[in-house]
Image 1 (cartoon, one colour):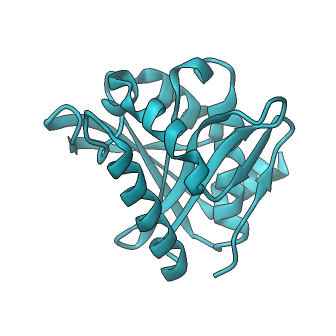
Image 2 (cartoon, rainbow, N blue to C red):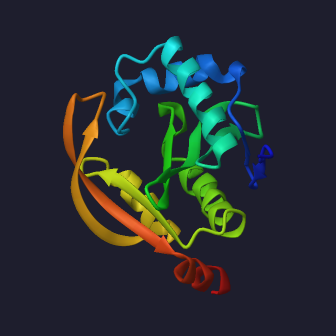
Length: 182
C-alpha cells in the first residue's frame, strides 16, 4: 500500500512517523484531549504512542487504516491527527488536536481533505463518525463537513474508564458528490 500525503492551504497531512512521538504524547497526554477519544488511555505515554504507530502501519498495509499527522505548514508544528479506520463494513473518520491548535479551523480543514480522500481514493460508499455528547465542537466540525445525524448510543472511552453517550453521523457518496458539485 503506498504512503499517502495530502495538502491543504495551511496544512500538510502525512503518515505519522517516529519523530512525532513526543508531540503525540504531549497532545493525547492532555486529559481534555484524551477524554474525547474512544481508545486512548489516560495517562498516555511513549509506549502507547509507539504501539499506536505500529498499529497504524499494519492497518495501512492491510488497507484498513489511513492515519495522517496534521502538520502546520507555517512552522512545521504537529497539530494533531486525522484518519480513517475500517469499522465492520464502513470507514470511520476520527481526529484529535493538541490544545494549542483548538479553535483555528484545522480540524475542519484537515478532515475535509481526508473525507475527499475516502470517497475519491478509497471509493467508500458511506463514511461514519461520532462525537461524545459533551464535545459539541467536534459535532460542529462534522456538521460543517456535511455529515448527517445517524443515531446515538454509548461508546467506550478508555481515558474516562466508562461508556459515554456518542452522537453518530454519516455521509454517503451521493451526499459527498452533492457537496462537491454545489
